[in-house]
Amino acid sequence: MKPSMPWPSEGVRRVPAVVYTDEAIYQREQERIFRGKTWNYVGLAAEVANPGDFIQSHVGSIPVVLVRDREGLLRVFVNRCTHRNAQVCHEQRGHAKVFTCPYHQWSFGLDGRLAGIPFRRGINGKGGMSSCFKAEEHGLEPLRVTERHGVVFASFAEDVEPLEAYMGPTILAYFDRVCDGRPLRVIGSMRHRVEANWKLQIENLKDPFHAALLHSFFVTFGIWRSDQDTHVEVDEPGRSSVLVSTASFTRATQSVVEQQSDSGGDFRLEDSRIIAHQREYEHGTGAILTLWPNLIVLQQLNCLAMRHVRPDGPNACVKSWTFFGYESDTPELLEKRLLQANMLGPSGLVTIDDNEVLAISQAGARSAPDSSAVLEAGAGTGSADHMLTESAIRAFYQYYQKIME
Amino acid sequence: MPTLSERYLLRDEVEHLYAHYCATLDDGRIDFWPDFFVEDGQYRLTTRDNHERSMPLSLILCRGQAMIRDRALALQKTVMFRSRRQRRMLSGIHLLDGGDVEREGVRARTSFVLYESLGDDPTRVIASGCTHDVLVRRDGELKFSQRLLVIDASVMPDSLVFPI
Image 1: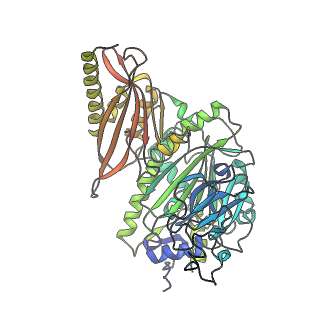
Image 2: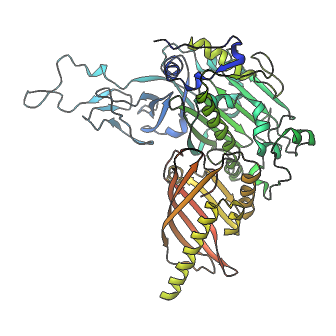
């Protein structure tokens, strides 16, 4: 049955609550978006530096394995034995020569080929695989793989456009601003499950309005504020965007404080090292890129992270943060990245705000399936040189509707 | 070499410190959290996944009591979250031999579970794990000069708002 996409007459100035809560719409997203013509982030090349290194990842809600094969090529497979569906990879990460399913010990090479089956010819001429069985037809299900500057993406679609064209010039420029070809160094990860639809998390990073209202910590310390130099860049199809802000590190003026219901008031940091910034990039002190469908490339001061938002049913998502720097980082710069990470993740002084509002937004959407969210800040679906617009969210849903219809 | 009775007395003091620490945070008195640390005390919370790979990233990293005070104050003044009740279960206090509590400190290893009750939902486990602590006596009182907390799970079920 085709799920209905009941968009109100206001178009993308509204988002029907069911897109966050409906199981049929969720299944359609898996098919149309994550199994469709998308490049899905699966990991960093540095996480699988040597032949045989692997990590588990996901494309949409589908578990996959990213592995470097014997020739050094990056491969991505669905983590499912082609015999009876058992998962062939059980460790989050590691090193393997083959992947062997524990159930009937079908074993698969690092290139995904079915390399071994026990008792293929039976015992004493009895039993074994039938004569029409062709091992070459039963390799692990492969995905297309591409890599740019150490970041690895996979796609179920044969005919997806090249990654660079998929990003478009604006998004590509901001992607390359952080991932510029210097070798990346993974410094750790954080993962947490939030009871909110995956799109709520993606929208959150397309919504510059909230940053200066909800995030008192940012406002108090002049890291992200509505009176600062800010812009929103939306790509041509509308599906990806970037928010760029320049921190003043000055305290909010009285007019900004008055708009803020619970700003930090006279709170001052005794030890300001957790926000001490070392300038690394031009154009803004923070640039947060959301790449269709579910990757957030985060640069906030010296914190760099790939934040992968894995859908976990319509009512939850798992946020998987891979923090990184460069191989060339000085110990001082690494220390800044580590201390500033206090703002992010499950215990982040800024992220906690988001986790909470996302969960209560999901609860609200579930309670009123016939309602719609309102996106009336600013107009249109294009770029803007200020924060007080919801244009990037409207652009996302314009594209979403097109893919889902 | 401390005498048996000295070891028992120290153990009693250590148990009291942990009980007081947990009760204070369970009572929501985050404002008293910094008082459990010495001035250059470190608080670090990470996952087993990061720890075993020697990844330097932490979920919480406070270098010094001033940073611990900043986090305590930030949680009270700038972070938005629904009110919740937490309950810390701490067990298996294992004092490692060797350190002098008056000087470099005594190393302790413990296990913990953190429960959380929020809104209408039933109580759930937020985290389990172990701690690697260093305790020192300053002005007659035991304090932490180091707390390293390692969470077992690599995925947290939600936010970890208050420190463990």
